[in-house]
Image (cartoon, rainbow, N blue to C red):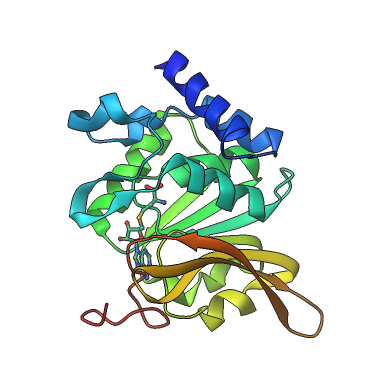
Length: 215
Ligand code: SAH
């Protein structure tokens, strides 16, 4: 598995142009196969999304690396992830920041992610079940927020829970097949947005995302 992980990281650097060495190191260190269902372990280091429980997916390694790189973490940050799923992206964030908070709407996924992360020795992670589109006011403001599900718009509570200079990375699109990876940077006077290209994510369902039956 280590060799396959090395090949995955080499591809991230050479074919997908991930430049942040700390991100590449974290992807080399975190055992992705531990987050993938048993039947799919052989595919854990392919560059693709894979199905997990509750009809959700573990994101493709490239998009995990790209979104993490866009957060520009140096190890001092408090970060929030929305859509913890298996906890793989959470593990990458916890490896690169001081403290990682993560919210997942499916209770069974939160529970399993929690178990996995503590088995792997992560002590700087706190997970909860809930609607992440509202953010996590108890631990705000955040240096960085990563949303791992696609939203019709940028949820306002997440922008307001960022520090000035903080970064929010989120897939945004009115249609499932037409999502863009957006980075929002909080500024003194408000925020600015950058478009980082097309992406495909499962829907972000909540008060400031899609309605239960809308997507
Ligand atoms: N980061 C995950 C990817 C999970 S896919 C991983 O590395 O495995 C996106 C996840 O977002 C799904 O598990 C889905 O249940 C969750 N989700 C969707 N809407 C949400 C919301 N409003 N709050 C929290 N989680 C949400």
